[in-house]
Length: 459
Image 1: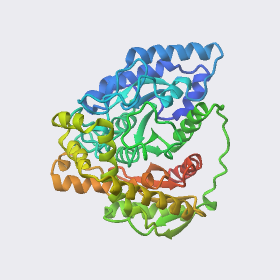
Image 2: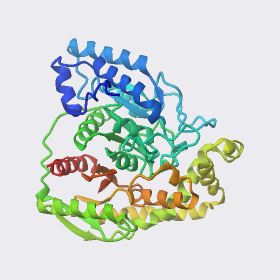
Image 3: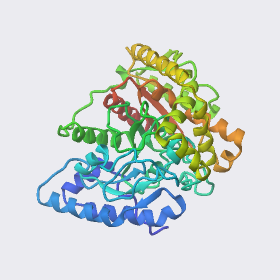
Image 4: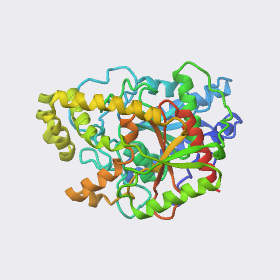
């Protein structure tokens, strides 16, 4: 592997490539070839990709090079090679398997997903489709139908990559793309980001369109980005949003200053059963921010524990409504047994119970939106523990305990309608994440805050 070319975005990130690309110092074809070479060399072991679209990626890259040479500039993401979670309809690529070997109902439609089309209009180069946990119903990243990607933070031991955007996080962490697309309904971007030592954002539900994507639970489904840094995530977020909403990307100064920010630190729920090393690293990070002038105030979030009663009802019920009871029963034997069992639990859900849970969630979302007034963000560890060995997940009781620790701190943001990011904490050993949660539709502001924190963490 010594002759493997370096990740071309590892030093300058998206901004560095954009400058070099426009100055003629590099080409989209050149960086795309490097990523394809890295995928060929690394993915045999890592197993991040479901499908690699080498020919179409190179063709698109060459087209981007010709366009920029002719004076047509599509924006900061032009010519950038990306990896996309295999849950979206993408023109010219295989129909999404969504991590499964079952025959899926036609719920995504034939048209390319609006979000994917926006990436195309921004000039992105599609390297291929990355693996997902079956039907997106799994936080560990473990998957028997399509294989469990190998977390590259430990090349000697197979550790959980996190899910369900497992392949996207592994591809990003291993330098097999410039950035990756995931989806997050309960932590499926933030947990893989934390476990793989990269950055991830879960957008506010409804902010970016999810048509043409497999629906795990339309009430909480969101699209997210997995990047090497908060800075890259902000640039990608602003560019994609401009394309989606008919505007033009305009760089701007954020105006964020750490000494003018106020963060809420939940006293309840988010610290339960957290590994002492992670808790210590989290406290040190907060002390570092306080030393920079950031105000941190203790808060109580009584609605956060409600997520434990909601998701085991909502997600199986939503999937059964999509798959159909008879279709599920006919194919459950070819599914991952853990996933099949979770979906099967939805057969016992009563409509009035689910409606009561949804009504409770609506009231809790309103209460939390009110409680956010005066705070720029709430902060917590992303996960309760480090990425475990895949072998530990195979023990039913231990595996369930580990999985619950992965969703404990991420599900509340989905349940309560918040946006959220996970950023790597600078610690020795296995990676952990520092989570920022923002009020609904403050996604851009949250990313700007993350950029400032990232800058001070790196000093």
